[in-house]
Image 1 (tube, protein in one colour):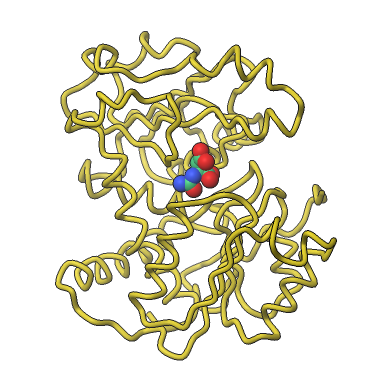
Image 2 (tube, helix red, strand yellow):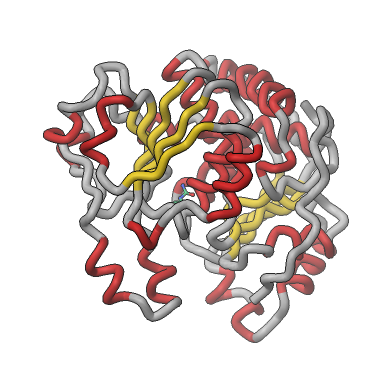
Length: 327
Ligand code: NCD
């Protein structure tokens, strides 16, 4: 396991070309808007069924060491829609030479030697993307690193809020569920905090609170937040509700399954609970859902978690094109 503190990646500062995308800490407002502008162009092409060739001749590799449906498929679709050559490898943990004990460094060097121009990586270690970036000449894109970060999800989450709420400022945002192990919540809180007049309510069981480093960061940026254990008390104030799964696999890894059983049903979103919420609320979720949102919620027009997925494709098209210098 790599838990050594390492360089968190260079600031984007308006220039994506050749950069690793490791953490939302690399982004300032201007970088977010830049990607959204490119994503708008991509979205228009997708809607008009326009053929794009931006990445013709580039080899995009995907190395996934953890389960994934959406992130894997949406990066793959993004690459295909830009006519890239693709090298998608799922199940790395079980089927690649990692199972024989090969290090991440050597695997990354291998994929680079084969000719990848960019490597999209999902891996259980918090610092996997930094390690990979250190050993590769080509850009690494973090598609989920341990419990720490999931920057491309945060970008698509902000893009979804912008498209569905019409603004990215002056929002009451409730983030609910597993805020300790939920990497999407960490990246989302940090990225959204860069916008104006955002006020967070973090709702979780006491043992699954938002990590202190993130709370400290918000405090230093003078971003308003409160911590809560009872969603019923606060739901009526929310403009955005970001619901998340209790991350069973991390409890398993730490032999805490008994604890998981105790808390797994603490936050379940139901139509009855949603009755107390604003009419123009949006309910988001990075998915997969297990049992934390009742299926009966799906027909409520405020539930936009499936639409949210669709915004991942233009965002990832924009990122791939920008990092490969083709935007
Ligand atoms: C999430 C992840 O893998 O971090 N899913 C995703 O990428 N959309 C959230 C989860 O697994 O609960």
